[in-house]
Image (cartoon, rainbow, N blue to C red; front, top):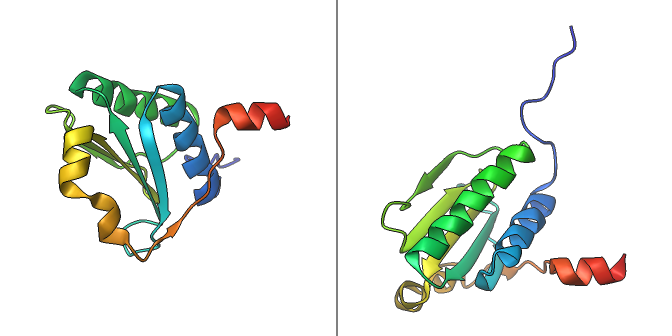
Length: 129
């Protein structure tokens, strides 16, 4: 009997790149990727949404696309309110915030010693192909 892996074996950076692309395709703004390497996660993506509905749509897309790619999805928090949605993909955690919440909470300052992770936009990847 062949044992099929439940989740995709892609690297953390590849997973972050996929999610970054999904956020970008769905018009998330000011996407930041930080390599935090903490006990909780390895990469944090922070993105701004234009409205609660937009934040929910971005989160929905991550969940649907993540399932198609067989990514491990641990949880989602804050979906009902839509002002700050967190999607936990184990080694990649995504924070989607309304602009005013992002300015108020300044999440990037929590990881001010983290290195920025350079991820390429989907349009740039297509031009290089």
